[in-house]
Amino acid sequence: MAYDDLRSFLTALDKEGQLLRITEEVRPEPDIAAAANAAPRLGDAAPALYFDRVQGFTDARIAMNVHGSWANHALALGLPKETGVKEQVAEFTRRWERFPVAPEWRSAPPWAENTMDGDAVDIFQVLPLIRLNDGDGGFYLDKAAVVSKDPEDPGHSGKQNVGIYRIEVKGRRKLALQPVPMHDIAQHLGKAEEAGEDLPVALALGNDPVISLVASTPMKYDENEYELAGALRGAPAPLAKAPLTGLPVPWGSEVIIEGVIEGRKREIEGPFGEFTGHYSGGRRLPVLRIDKISYRTDPVFEHLYLGMPWTEVDYLIAANTCVPLYQQLKTDFPEVQAVNAMYTHGLIVIVSTKKRYGGFAKAVGMRVLTTPHGLGYAATVIVVDEDVDPFNLPQVMWALSTKMNPAGDLVQVPHLPVLELAPQGQPAGIVDKLIIDATTPVAPDGRGNYGNQVRDLPETEHWLAKLQQLAARG
Image (cartoon, rainbow, N blue to C red; front, side, top):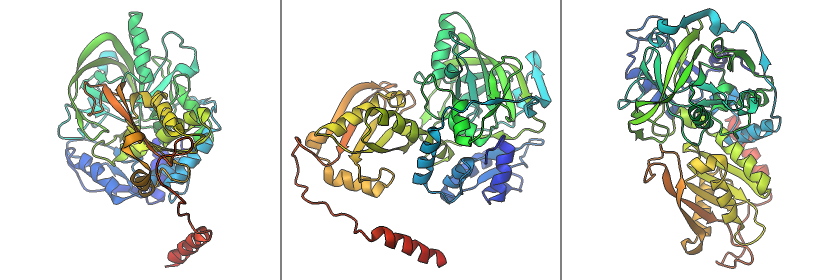
């Protein structure tokens, strides 16, 4: 089923027992963030959280942990909530094959019900803002889909961008936004500033679940996120034009914020508890001026807790980081079987592959480092044999334990780029990267004494299915 807005997805979660309504009155800080911090610890079927009785706010509606479990992630894709992790990644891959699916334009978006313009703009009157971690430097919008276009080629729909970036609220109509250099919006802003111009942007808050997934997917620069949304939904993504900027925004959003990133203007932003599980410090980052807010009556504020993994952000950027890396590697190396880049947005990547000849696995690892996402992430790459499931960590640890010899299986590549948020960078944004070859050597590489490997008995799969059926009967 394709959901056109956040509210219909929350209703579906409720029907599936995947939405927990907090009926007691809670404190805005720290209760809401602490609950969202705790929720994923309930396991792979952890529910989304909905708060509508918040001290100090009138008519606040806050949704947390919407993508914060594999059950919710499956439902976002229209799959049964019991669908396993590996199966979800495989289904994501199959649907990617449908890409692109053109979006459809709709009129009368629900977010057009109310507006604020110019000096009358006051974001504090629209959103019940809260801090997420006690060391955060202010209020943040961290699940908004930010829409921008390439200033040099604004008519090219592939070069538009829909991405999720952290955004600090600096005032009633002023925000600070972090454009990571590896991300498309940084290229858009750089081109605008070279031309001496501001960059028009639109921020969409409270979106249907697939929009959030594609906005956090590391796609190529000229690939359109809305066209991927259509492939994942199985139906065209519904869009509307933002009234001030004309940018294409999701039809079903709760809130649309429009304005410009002011060229060559910077202010201190941060610190913020990031997806790395560490705080980032204060830095000079671009400033966004809000010129218009359009919003549904009594909007639902969807917020995203980030902290020590796993939290909602780790589910949000798991499958959709694995699949584009797999697609890109498979183009050059058809021997690649699977890619697991679920951990900390792919700062570590595990690849299973067949091998043509000795040294082949290391070449696959080098290619990971030069993919669009690997350039800014992928600090460590582990390559395993084709019969090792990269999503099965005990199997990966077995491969590391028995296949890897540091004398010849570690490749350290010095001084490569990494996003500045990676705490291991020294200086920030630069790191040595590591390829670990945990595959069985093949000719002409004759190292080791492997002999014959123990294989599953032919009847194992039959007995696995039989035992699962017996256990289900209980």
